Image 1 (spheres, helix red, strand yellow):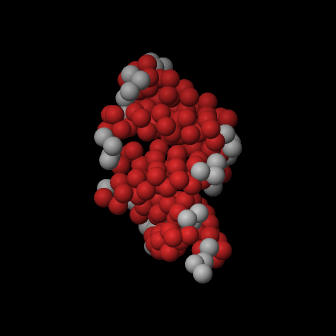
Image 2 (cartoon, helix red, strand yellow):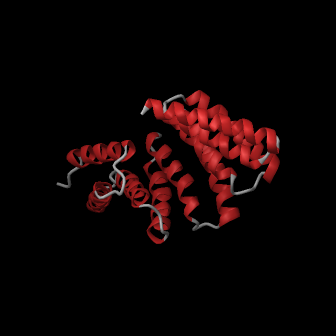
Image 3 (cartoon, one colour):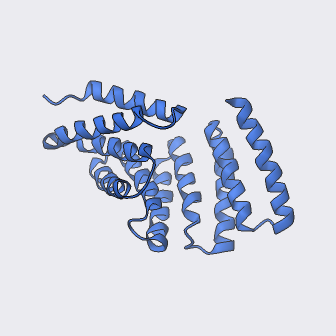
Length: 214
């Protein structure tokens, strides 16, 4: 709801003012507030404003924590999402790849947070008509999320992207349908019926309707 976004902006801007005054403009907690402001703007479709907040957060994170700190993964993933939303797919891929590199080194290759840049790269690959890259990255993300205690919606996302990547290979189409149907079930039974979940359901329903195994 638009009014709630504006209220959130006021809250975060006030928090930003307080933290900057109390801790200094380059404190890691300031970066957290900037990421939150970026997310509100992103949800409103204000991509340039969101990108500005995310870049500021990334810069602070590098200075305060170091260029290899896992906290940077959040800002890099966020920048990837904004670039993707703007249709800047190569730029988005660069952010996701950097997030993946840092996440794997700092957290381990099977850490749940590594699933986010993997999914980002997979989604970009689909847009860039590279189903093999999409398959490799989505498969890894799905494997991580099947083991980790993540929200069912995240597992659904990985299964659906993998389904789309597999469809280009005829011998994988049965598996692709099964994965998409599993994703559909997870979203139908999601604990939250928010806008994002509904959009995913519409997308997977449309995909299933037009992708049938003959």
